[in-house]
Image (tube, rainbow, N blue to C red; front, top):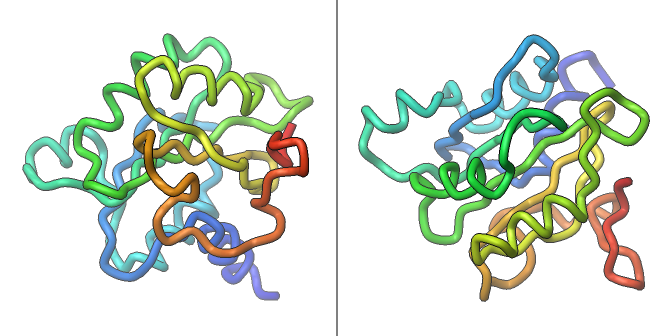
Length: 163
């Protein structure tokens, strides 16, 4: 695997494909630049920040939401992130893994999603980060376009494979 393939493989776990529009929120100095590059490589376009998405006036296919403990009110931020989301789109809440500063348990993401009428599905491990997909409730329970990746599967008791 080359240095470029690893981020592309991680990004592919999020199910992004060529031509999709991805908005990024919560960017800070600690984000995974490789994952960001992988997403842009797969989509063929630069990710939009919330100002650019507002200016474009069109829906986005996915939102990559970096979130750490202490970043604010997660239900409020999720509610804000879903505004530009196209029908069938996914908000990927990306949090540090257990043991890293700012870790947020995927169950907390699930509770925040339920608070605003959305649903969180199985967490996807991404190295030092983990991504919990949040979709409009009543959907299939699997983010549109997500790869059939065993690392993204829920365990038999319904909990996520992340911690």
